[in-house]
Image 1 (tube, helix red, strand yellow):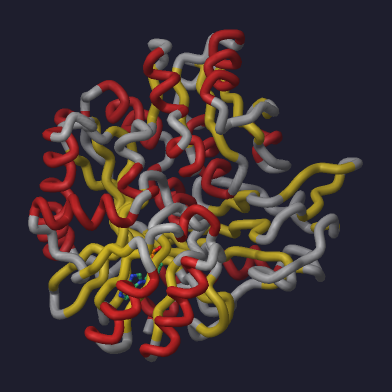
Image 2 (tube, rainbow, N blue to C red; image 1 turned 180 degrees about the vertical axis):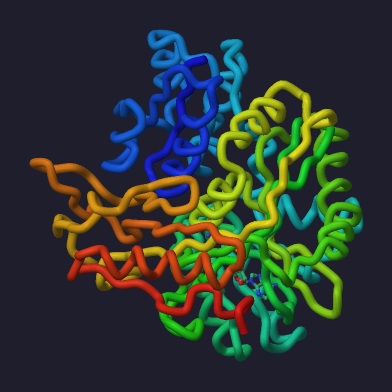
Length: 421
Ligand code: AMP
Ligand code: GLY
């Protein structure tokens, strides 16, 4: 079959890497792609957030199946346009994507099904929000309601900080995303990500992972999109996963179906774990980036069969073929990230790395120019390895990192520290 993946980051490179290994894939196109993707697929350029443009491309190129990587096309309703045109698609409808696009919507669903999560209040004016904070005290969490590229969450240590964050949000700092604000109880514990596929009715767990959000070693410095990840996450034990499925995820999916917006695609549940109990931090309606890279490294070609089963309503009979393995990815970013950084520096040493089923450099912000790979983004490479143990995966990932010649890049040297102690 002919397959189209929307997106052009490390997440999409790892999805493409898994998909092309599956004999069901005859042709793969990725839009917009990057330098790594252009080595394993055709790359196309059109507006992936424009449902009409996507449907036109799919019809012209006889695409049979579309996998949507990032949240923006999902929130823009691209999956709906494809389904209306009779095209098989992996990814939720615009209505169901509200589980990520609106924090207030998710909180309301959690309340309806009694899913464990932080207590919250939802506000449309600053005075009421500030009065709530004053009454609750600190620490407390202030969140812009809408999509804010992961930046709309402030963990306030003091009431004064929370008040300042509320002023910033209602003052337009986060654009339309901050027109409504959710204020949450601060949850203590260890955070981990749980990934399940959903076909509108059934739910199939496909793995756990842990991200490293801060830019610096030892979890210091500002938040980023994620500086590295590993799978599985030991803190998310089978028993905790079972509780999360029973008390949080399955009831959410049932409630979505009951409201006439069945959820189809991957659901990424961010969980806070304390004393053996998971509580929901947030849902995302897509794979995490870089969590996807470690999941794909472990799943390989079967990922396509599982995504097809989700799209066609066949998850009840689907099984994941688990290996007793570990994967770890190190993000290499441009110096300055997550602040401002230069683009266009040349990355050397990539040709000497032979990618295989246990070692891969997934590309994020790269392009090819005159036969060379150049950096075009903040997060640029995801150096990913699989091993019998996490320590083995970590050692091999860093050995690859050390063979890459990119003086304008940096990475964290401690990815995996929580699990490796
Ligand atoms: P979100 O965009 O909702 O995932 O929030 C970004 C990050 O802020 C999460 O991954 C957590 O690390 C942290 N966070 C969000 N909400 C809470 C909360 N209620 N308590 C503690 N930490 C939180
Ligand atoms: N790595 C976190 C995310 O994709 O949201």
